[in-house]
Image (tube, rainbow, N blue to C red; front, top):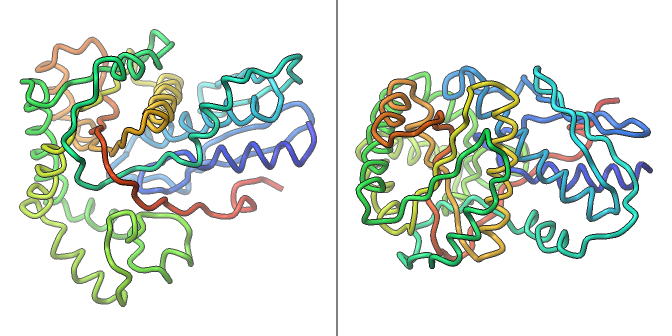
Length: 321
């Protein structure tokens, strides 16, 4: 494997989603493999105290790696260690799989779309395509249509999650620490939650900070989230059979494949993880939905106009010397 191929693959890999767009991954390049491992300095100790979402994000990156390596003409197998390190072993492919291009092309197009959606229902045929992305027994994907009792239940869990999180000063401070309030701030860090992905104007930072402080309260957030949820076609909930690092990484792979397939189908997705992030809500949610696994990721999905893409830091930030 040459350096040019390795850099190409990593460039696509880091386009994966991550909590607060922290981009919590690092890479080491060897002659026959690439080491993918977590950057714990980018952890979110308040919203993600056990680093579960960090390792889910790492799994999303691994899935991007899978498609990018094949695009470059390699077969890839992954050795996932219990500590979250992943060794991607690359060998030249004898034949190129043309179907790889369809998924690879979605890596740069995929985005987290926080807009209000159109309200259009996703057809049963497309739902079937989305459900088919899960290939591992340790991860289950559940899709709940709008105007169903389970959908309404999940909406209420999101609302309760907002109340608990936004009354927590430490949670709000951590969130604000990753906010990027205008174009200058966004370009300086090239990570975090950009003003542009929320559809906010490019204003002087002191004004944007004041507006954000006003919005970060349960009443305002729930009013906004209820509108967004009502405009969505389905909730998508991903669960794991066991709460451990390997399962979280595998869930991240399934999640990213779901997001790439949704992008291919013209479907928008946005994270609504509040009920999964708060332990007492997660336990009750598992009981109320009669889930066999543990809830980890909740998305709302539907049709929407494109949104802004989050920025990524330069590759040099991710590659060990």
